[in-house]
Amino acid sequence: MRLSRYFLPVLKETPAEAQIVSHRYMLRAGMIKQASAGIYSWLPLGFKVLRKIEDIIHEEQARAGHIPMLMPTIQSADLWRESGRYDAYGAEMLRITDRHERDMLFTPTAEELITDIFRSNVSSYKDLPLTLYQIQWKFRDEIRPRFGVMRGREFYMKDGYNFDLTKEDALHAYNRHLVSYLRTYERMGLQAIPMRADSGPIGGDDTHEFLVLAETGESEVFYDSEITDLKFGSREIDFDDKAQCQAVLEEFTSRYARTDETHDEAVFHQVPEERRRTARGIEVGQIFYFGTKYSEAMGASVQTPDGQKVPVHMGSHGIGVSRLLGAIIEASHDDKGIIWPEGVTPFHCGIVNLKQGDAEADAACESLYASLTALGLEPLYDDRSERAGGKFATMDLIGLPWRITVGPRGLKNGVVELTSRRTGESEELSPEAALLKIA
Ligand code: ATP
Ligand code: MG
Ligand code: MG
Ligand code: MG
Image (tube, rainbow, N blue to C red):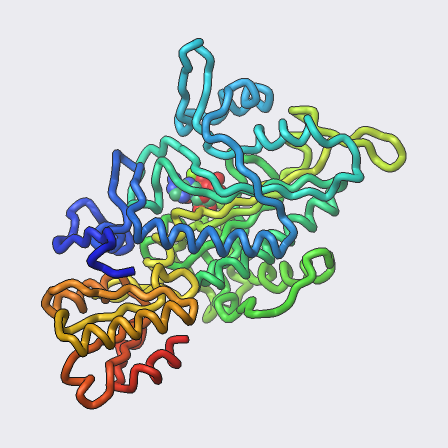
């Protein structure tokens, strides 16, 4: 992409309404624009990162054997009356009346709709196990939308639902989600710690939240510091192997790690004092096993091998896709701007032309642009006739992992400058050598 043809409305001033760094940088870098309280337009740069996050989620869900689909955002109230949640959900649910005076709503989550799809189409144990998921907009009329996309009213969520014959199978689905989420967040450059949580209005027995440690997090968390040494890494997992998934779950959940809702001082004090930590965290996902809560209320049952009819065991599993942009920035930035982890960066490399219009500099930039593209990378070429200082400030703000700076003086010696956004270190080297380092 050439910056002269892109749409990157960078703000010079720090917007007064933004209280936390991720919100400030997302506004300043022209990633989002508020449309009304807690509702945002996703401008091209923000949209690009949102798509990258979504791609990682789809890849990791496919690896775990889960099946993507899409459900509508506007739903009829009738299904929600069947489960009893139409009244129970309260003021967070945005209720809508259509021209025929029918009660509709904007989906805050989708247990009812997916259970209806299941009961209409599945009646035998032979079709199980089944895990369906979507990535779709949700609406919750949050009492205090704030911190930009962190607590929006409209937000983008991955929500998955498992259907299993037995509790044991459903707990395997739960474990599979835990394992695949560990991998998913790590690919985004995040450490998200599974913590024992409270099930809230979704209801249920087993649940973990995934928390990213950050001072601006809304949850208070308590954990054994050993947990931050755990890495999922590149280990190969057979997601059908129950024992293997169970072992990963035990590895990542056996140490003390709880949110304030489930925190227990007495149990916490069994952790050696020097390892006890209290911190703030951002909830970026949550997994639930809730058994037959919805399948019983809505009549979603299957025939067992010996001919009995039993309600299916279910769980639901969410990732805060749009919130993740804020969480990643909270975890990775400095005073100049965002520092994108490689896995989610909107462009791989910035090219800054110090003297636009200089034949040699222009040609060198074009050649780098073509080579990077040929390597399957996406460069962002700042080809505007701006001062170098302004170009550098924009590149630092939008936080691409690499910047190549090209100017007539360096080119006389056959070199360009390669700068790492994370370390700030620069080196002069030939354009070919710079390409090798980035690729
Ligand atoms: P919170 O405790 O932050 O209100 P929640 O527990 O109500 O979140 P879930 O029902 O668990 O949310 O939804 C799954 C995920 O969706 C959450 O883990 C979170 O990352 C994300 N999410 C929930 N509410 C919002 C929101 N208002 N804005 C952005 N993301 C959200
Ligand atoms: Mg909530
Ligand atoms: Mg919560
Ligand atoms: Mg939650």
